[in-house]
Image (cartoon, rainbow, N blue to C red; front, side, top):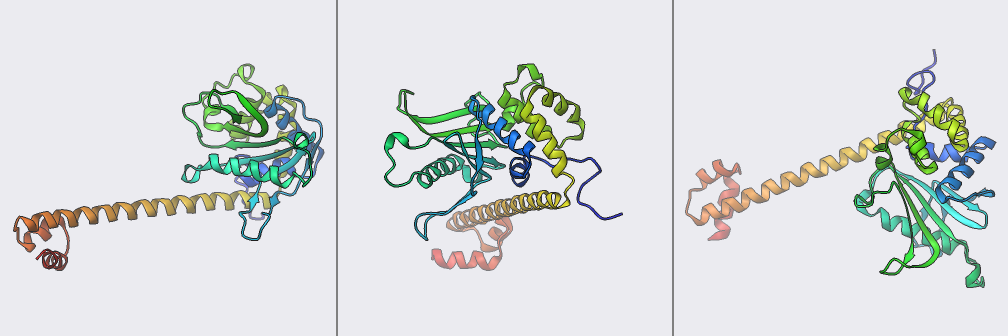
Length: 295
């Protein structure tokens, strides 16, 4: 039997993994196209009819400009939409990243000479596998340009966040879920073998999810896609290992700094270097060097 990365026959890929999320909606099939169209309709809370995929990498105007690469970039009914699956909030700066993406897309698709009233709306839609705003109770939140009193100034730039951890806490009662929240449950449960009956029920209530479920089952038969998912988890594991190593290094540096500070205070009290070395667990040579510096 050929070796495979698929954990067991019938296992499904995880759509919360960004390369799988991208494949789910951009693979060349009518089901994937319908799934993306329905997903956008449910998130934007209005019917979307014309969806055309665009290049997912946009260059800057100058060679040194910051580049932007998206999971899904598309034109929808004369508007522009960038859709992302984001697994972590690196350095707590995802708000800035989303804002930059929206502005970059707007600039890219606004040709010179276009009248201001004809500038297209831009939607930066992010499915977040982390909580972005713990003070906001809603699972799906919509942001645009407002003044300090909350009055809308412009709806040209629009940022939409779907926070999956909040959706995970909602009851699984399908009747109580909004269409957008149903998608959140789908992303969270689609690869869970014990939740397949629930996903099937979701598919009965949401045509787009039915299409996405069909696509997911099809693409999960491709070994290359399992390679992409495995590589993703390896990358996540490496990042976590690096963060833990940095944390441990920081703790060690903190302990070293505290030991030196304590040694200096004891030297000022004329405690012998031999006793200080035992107390603060520093080499006697280092204590002697500190004593020379103090004298």
